[in-house]
Length: 218
Image: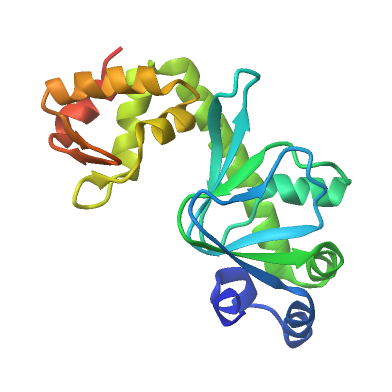
């Protein structure tokens, strides 16, 4: 609870808002890969990430997955907010990408906070605006870039400062909405070009500049 109150919008709550939050918030610890929400879930409140990260994704009829957006610490799930305020079922799937702490603020409590706390109003509007830009950027990437460019971009965005990325080929495929076999072929091309080195569940970027140059090619 203390961790939640240290996050941006909650650190600005008034005394009444803090008391209201204390009465209703529920914190849950989630292991990597743990399912948080599935399509069709009846939403009972607002979900905020305290630490870790959540992945929101869609599932195609053939079972392939595609990442829609991520939820980082201090951020909330906009789909859940939309479902909560409009009495709709949840439209996607959510899982933890890393050890993650999720705070659930029950619907009646969040509605009261939204009505009385400017900080909660602000974070809600910002979340909606951010999601629109993220989804538009994702659509632009799908239409403008080839799959190898999208994969290169994904590697560069998610690698650590040491150039390492701990993801399996299946996880990469799920992010991109393709198959593991396609990702394996592309990773083989990257490795042959000296751009990456791959091990089981781990990827090291060897030549970031060359990988970035691939993104710019049409």
